[in-house]
Amino acid sequence: MKRVSSHVSIASEAEINLDLSRLLIDKPRLTLERKRSFDEQSWSELSHRQNDGFDSIMHSPAFPSGFDSPFSLGTIGDPHPLVNEAWEALRKSVVYFRGQPVGTIAAVDHASEEVLNYDQVFVRDFVPSALAFLMNNETDIVKNFLLKTLHLQSSEKMVDRFKLGAGAMPASFKVDRNKNRNTETLVADFGESAIGRVAPVDSGFWWIILLRAYTKYTGDTSLAESPDCQNCMRLILNLCLSEGFDTFPTLLCTDGCSMIDRRMGIYGYPIEIQALFYMALRCALQMLKPDGEGKDFIEKIGQRLHALTYHMRNYFWLDFPHLNNIYRYKTEEYSHTAVNKFNVIPDSIPDWVFDFMPCRGGYFLGNVSPAMMDFRWFALGNCIAIISSLATPEQSVAIMDLIEERWEELVGEMPLKICYPAIENHEWRIITGCDPKNTRWSYHNGGSWPVLLWLLTAACIKTGRPQMAKRAIELAESRLLKDGWPEYYDGKAGRFIGKQARKFQTWSIAGYLVARMMLEDPSTLMMISMEEDRPVKPTMRRSASWNA
Image (tube, rainbow, N blue to C red; front, side, top):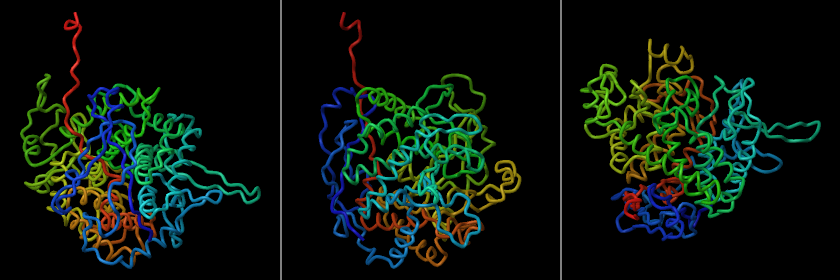
């Protein structure tokens, strides 16, 4: 396996209220604190930002790579035998288009009778594969993927005579080979072939996040700065930042528009989409050029981030004191001073929450909208909240405290529960429409997904808890290879291979590789992690009366 000796840092984005012209001139470099051991301090403590420019991408090395890194765990030892097996399986999933690698298919399960769409390259599925290839210095496949999906964005997007927005990114694509004409064509799916005919909201966000990871890790700024990539980001952002009837800064979306791509009661403002939205906005803020249209989008992003950060940290956050406050809420409050702003009925709090919530810990709710709070815990949204610094340092610690306190429920025998708890009985019939795939503790309804291991590991490293990640990785290593790299596991503890799980699921393989490589070399977290914003005072401007 190849090793990387240095990594490239991208400058952090501007604070929302700072003056743009001043920021674009003043760009001091990032400095990093290395005095204490990694186990003794959180990632945010180590990464002190000192750059507020929007578009600057620096070429200074961040961390040395390898076991001699001051942040290496040091107890991993020699590479696990599973690593070589994983790389071999990952390489078998690579898709080629006109001789060039352009992605990885969802699964290489030759035993399965139905291929369905598992032979396609999914945008969200490819992200852990891309990170694994980047960490192994194999960057071409990532660049090719970014370029091919960028060009697919301009494809005609029609679903039953209705045209999707120009910024929509495909859920997946496949290589259509015509043997008679000896031609190859990329065919994209924007949701018109998906179960439920739902367009993916998360694809565009993952594309922006991956573009930043590629740029930061390789130092190749030419790709992000190219007119095509700049235009692609603007089109995606135009869909998300357009004004409408919403009174919230969060992004309204339908059920099944993300990793949970079936009816699971996440319509509205699901935490997974909001966390990815936040992270994509911050990534785009770093890469957009402040000229022409780019400058307008930079201003829009700054305004949205300001409101979105406040909204998520205040209204989506739940810990023991907040739960107690909601339990005592009064209803039907009509005024600007209302405490129960969403008119949540305390009797709607499910009984399980009172036992699940520890005195020490907290998490972001699954969904918040008028008169409704989804109290379920969702793994991806909470891990992304930590990685992107949507969560404050205190909230990040609380999320990890909760995972530690509820390890048996959330990790069990196979990391990690996609959501907790499962919905069942009458609630299952109403919310899922009697979905036979999403029965209790299976698939998206409380199933355990190995791909989430890389997100858990990233969150553990950023909060200074590598031993938690090591424990989770060792659990996965005890099962994954002998079970054939399943897509997901079933049961309360994740003990059973999923009843409809595909074997040799690519993102299960890649998720493990990324988790292990990240634990061996925590400095690789820098390409995906974002640091906490510094609080700043708003820019003071003189009024007209002062000038008069």
